[in-house]
Length: 111
Length: 121
Figure 1 (cartoon, helix red, strand yellow):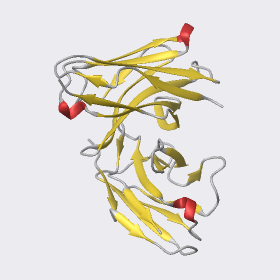
Figure 2 (cartoon, one colour; figure 1 turned 30 degrees about the vertical axis):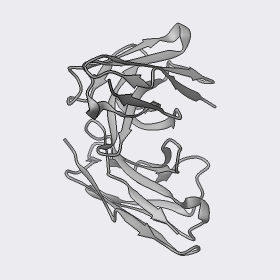
Figure 3 (cartoon, helix red, strand yellow; figure 1 turned 135 degrees about the horizontal axis):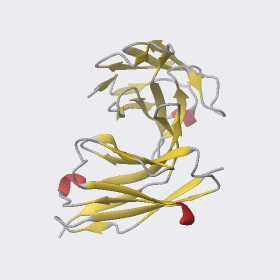
Figure 4 (cartoon, helix red, strand yellow; figure 1 turned 45 degrees about the vertical axis):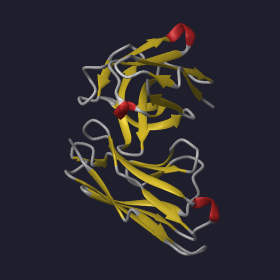
């Protein structure tokens, strides 16, 4: 099983500043035949289901603001939120779909 | 835009079977897989299993012996049954749509609002 570990568990960032969330997988999620990282990021606001924001480690889902960006490859990934807005308060999860499906434990982002 | 809605009992007795249904509207079954994911305070988000439009299933090995996911394309629904439930199965259960690639489903691009299931006698 691939274990996903996020850091930090909780993060407080001022409005307009940058938030950085890390995700590490216990084994590589880079598929060599297509050079794609099988990793997604989700945003979950209070009382709502998760919402897909990033797929393939760095591709923003349609309609997601460009202040959200994903990077990384292999086992180490980062979600960056630039110019943090109040509506970005949420819990963020990474998820691998390389082998079965597993999620990180979540990072609680606060203002 | 696709919408998913979970339905089913919110309270299940220990050792009994949990049954939930997801109704899909505004989208087609044929080009996606359909999944159940649960979320509990203790275990976070956990993939339970999924079913393709052709009816083939894939389950989380940790739950496989107790899980069945079925599809009713005529009603635009898919269902989850989880047998022999315990307190550890208490969670918010989400149904979700999966984007399908050449060889397998990938990520979850649309989710239902979730339904809370409590396990208690």
